[in-house]
Length: 391
Image (cartoon, rainbow, N blue to C red):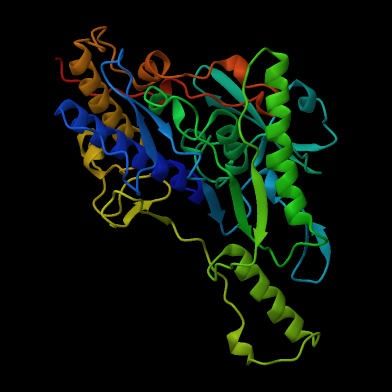
């Protein structure tokens, strides 16, 4: 149910990779040689004489991945000094709640509110600080007037980018078919005109680059041998006119005109009205036939008819949801099983979490150390069954 732009862009990449792998496996199964000269291919096919099916590697020597976002990723990366609409300087406040560990729970002078959220069999302690603590994991902000069971427990985008840079963008299921992880080369963020003294770039480096380095060093101390490319962060002048930051800047300009700090070039009727964020999300990716999919941000379901019963949900689910991506994993695994005469799913367990743990490079809890120590893992409430055709 996380429809933030960073998450959708990563899911779009994963969907494109799955489409390429499935197409190549079909070619291999039909006895046709997989094309190695396709200029649009993201993956190279590694065919071993001892293997029944090919493996794949991202073309990192000729292709690099760069993410652009129009706002600083939510969470820790948004904590920096800004100039307010009143002309004052203050630290930007993130609505994301901090995930408390044993140390912060006792800082009662700083934690202004405390709540426990049930996340499976474990209770997660969340807090709201008076003075914001940096370099901490946070869950995405949500309205205070909705029931606890409907609140998002998704971690913030800044935290997820750290995770993707440490473990790769591919996820557990895709790792079954890939020889090595796939990582971002850079992330580019539109300049926040409210930022004071380069605070926005400093926050990005602190939240992303420093936490990635600290996590990798913590893993090495626990004998985890990981060596991935460093993430570069940049501030760019490209500006998204409908962004929240753009709206805040227009409010600031309107206020300055009102009090005479800058000359009036427009009439008072041009000052921006109060706006609310759009509740819809749009996604498109290579391989989706250039069709834009519109989903409801709060549910992740496609816009249109509402699901009245449980069986109404699959047809309305986004092409980027875990269920549909997992269906592609099953189809690809069926092809590999047919080639090797191996019934990979004979155990009968069709649960999503079980498939992740058994058939991919699943990340164990000990890997979440350093800045990622309190990461919230998926539990039983996030599990679902996948239909598997017996071969």
